[in-house]
Image (cartoon, rainbow, N blue to C red; front, side, top):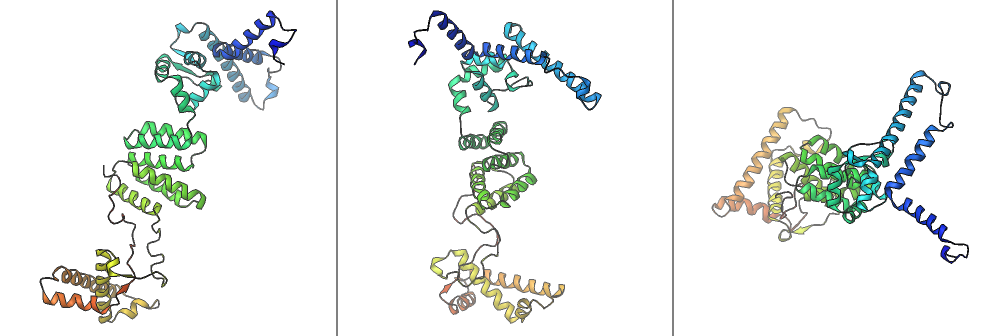
Length: 379
C-alpha cells in the first residue's frame, strides 16, 4: 500500500519524508551528513586506540598522525561546505550540486577522468576541485559528462584512436587509464593504446617489448590483441623508418602472414599455379632461382649444400656467395636486355621454356607489405 493511502499518514509524516528526500537528493547535505557521521566515528570510544594496540612506537605514531589528519580533513571540508565563497578548492559535493548529479555520479565522473581533482582525500568523495575545473565541467555539461562516464571499453578505444591520429598523447593516456581501471593493463585495447603512445614517443624498445608480450599470449589473448593493435597502427601517423618497419610487420602478422619466414615453404601439398596466375616478381624470382640453382650445380657444390654433415670452410662459403651473386646478376641482366640481345633472349628462354608450365608460387621470407596496397601511415 502506498504511504499516501495509509489512513495513519498525516502532514507531519509528509514533512519528515520531504526532509529525508532532500537529504538523499541534495549532494551537499548528503555530504554534510557523511562528514558528521565520520567525525562521530573517529571520536567514538570504540575507535580510540592506545600504544598497547600496536607493535611499535612508530606504528602508534603513524596511527595518531593519520587519525589527526582524517579529523582535520573532515573539519576543513565541513567549513568549506558552509563557506565555499572563501575557497578556490571546493569539495566534489558542491560540483555535484552545480551539475545536478548525485555524489555517486560525481565520483564516477572523477574516476573516469572526466574531471581533474586538485586534492585527493582519504576517501574518493573527499576530493576537491578548483573553481576553474568546476567552470570547465559546467561548460561540458552534465549530459555529456554522464554519457562519457557510461562509455564501454570499445568506445573508449575509438576515442583513443582519434587522439593518437592527431598525436594527442595526453588524451590517449587518459583513455588508457580508463580502460585499465575497467579491466587491466593487459586488456587488448589497453595494450594497443600503450603501444601507440610509445610509437608516438619514439620509444622503439618499449614498442617491441609490448609486441613480444602480445605474440607470447595464448590464442584467446593473441587474436583480440592483434586486432586492436592493427586498428591502432592503421590510425597512427607516420613514424621513423624503424617504427614503420615494425608497423608493417605487425600488420602483416595480424593479416595472417607467417611469423616464421620459412614455415610451410617446402611442403609438397602446397598447390602449383600457372605463370599467368602469379605476379611479375614471382615469375622473375622463379627464373632467377633456376639460374642460381643451375650455377650451383655446375659448380658442383649442390651436394655440399644438401649434406648436413658437410663442413663448409669460410673460403668455400665465400665461393658460394660469389656464385650466387654472379648468377642473380646474370639472371637480372639477361632479363633486362631480353628484347635487345639475342643471347639474352636465348638464355632466358632456355630456363623459362624447359620448366613445367605449373610451378609453386614463391613466398616472402620476410614480412613485407602486401603487393598493390598502400603503406600504412603515409599521411
